[in-house]
Image 1 (cartoon, helix red, strand yellow):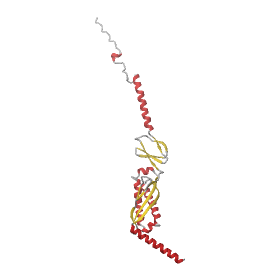
Image 2 (image 1 turned 180 degrees about the horizontal axis):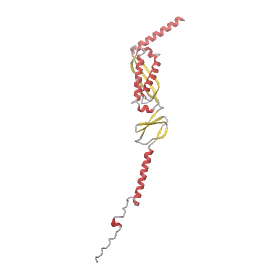
Image 3 (image 1 turned 120 degrees about the vertical axis):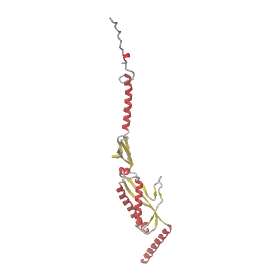
Image 4 (image 1 turned 135 degrees about the horizontal axis):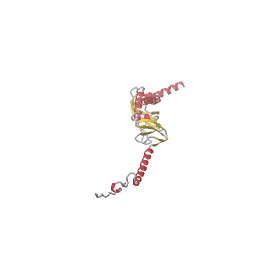
Length: 239
C-alpha cells in the first residue's frame, strides 16, 4: 500500500483568515468609526447653524439664492441656507443720508458747502450749494438696480438745479425763487429716481448757500437799496 500523505492541518493563521486589527467589523474598526461619525455630525451641524442671521431694528435685508432675490426680511432672527447657496445683504432703511450739489459729505459732524457756479437766466454767475436728504425705501432696488446710487442722486439733482436756475433771473433766484428751486429739485429728482428704480425716497432739498460775484453782488445791493428808498419815499408822500 502506498504510504498515506499526512493531512495538512488547516488553521486560521495559515489560511490567512484571522482578521487584522483595525479592519471594519473588528472592535478596532468600530472604535475608529464612532469618532469619525461624531466629528462629521458636528461639522454638519456647524455648517447648517451658520445659516442663522440677525437683522437689526434699523435694517432690512435681502436674501439671494444663487444670485436671484428670493425674499426681503425685516428686523429679527431669521434663517437662510448656508453659503454658497444663499447670501444676505442688509441696509439701514431708517438712517437719513445726505448728498447734494456743491456739498461735501461730512466725515464728522461738520458739513462743508463749497458751492457750484451756475449761470442764471439773465447771464449772471452765482455759486450755489444744495443738500439733499434721503432714505432707502427698497433695499433690493437700492442694492441691485443701479450702480453707485448716492452718486446718482447728486448727479440728477445737479441737472435739475441747473435747469431751474437758468430759467430765472438772478434777483428771482436770490429772493422768491429760492423755495421754488428747492421744491423743483426735490420733486423732479424723485421722479427720475423712480424711473431708475433706485429704491430711494428724498425727504428734503435745501439750498445752503447762494453767493454772487463781487461786482454783481454790489450792483444787486445797489438796486435793492434803490427800491427800498423809493418805497420809503412813496410811503412818506402818502403820509
